Image (cartoon, rainbow, N blue to C red; front, side, top):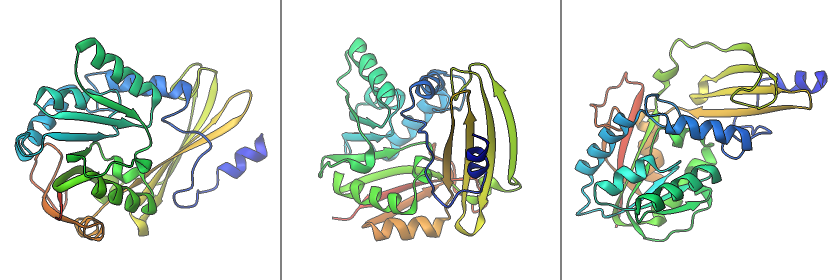
Length: 278
């Protein structure tokens, strides 16, 4: 086990996958759902008061009268989806986590909300000209590799109707200004990564030439050693324009956040509204 640990402690190759998945691990998915549902933290979902402000802003810039059919990618347990429904949209939610989708479906059934949910990897979705508006919220786009980001934009383009809109947010390199590479250990009896006692080595790696960062978690229990690599590519305005143009989109506008804040060259975030060309 020690040799295995030492091998894992090497700086990972760019976009190297780990041996565990945040979204599908039985224990971690419980903790992720708990974080989604906590209304007072910016964890897996933003604070729920912030969610309502975001949905209110999106409803203003992409009014339901022109964009009635909405697809929320990475919808989690349906917190945004239910707010979009309250604002009049016909909502479809898609997420990779079976636990989150099960919660979202149960919530919609209990409240008698006609929201459609799919448990699916959005990189494999196959919708064709079905939606007027697609959202990807809380910087999910940046966790994907270069190849997967290009693939997703193509999938989204096909899924949108002509003149359909894509609204999403990302981090800029300023998000990591002043943050150095580091390693630290933690111990837990029953923590975020495992119900069993575990020792975890948390590492931050910088790939500055690619504006990309990795948070790695190596989890050691009595039985095994596993690791998770959480990637975060950060974007400049020019890179986003190039990526969207290559996929067939035209950029309508940039904002500093997905609540409509003004864009700044020194800001930590960018929100983009992009349109599918006819």
